[in-house]
Image 1 (cartoon, rainbow, N blue to C red):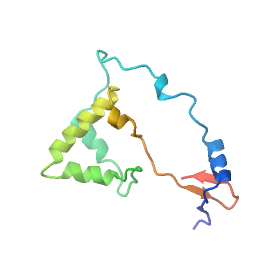
Image 2: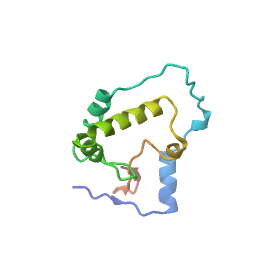
Image 3: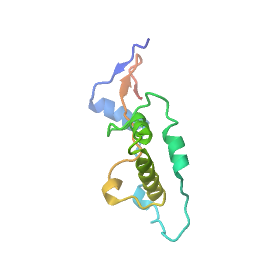
Length: 127
């Protein structure tokens, strides 16, 4: 059992986290625009199904609250599973091609829930 506890939000905690995790050295706007005529990687429905079903039971979701189990349930649904798999595959290929719709691009697609923990040595860690 651990004696670690959640860190209280404070300027000191934020400073410690920023020191451990500095800002990125570049922004996404530095990336070149995708060329629609270039051939790029794509995935098929079998790859998407295999990836979506590979998450261990109880895997955490992102800030949007969608957990891998939600995706699994949707894909396994008798009525909508095939259409959901097709839509997820199409969307994934759109993102891979660098053509993510603006309405979606404003949100982080790679997301995780973070909790700052203060351990016995009083240092701050992210989990």
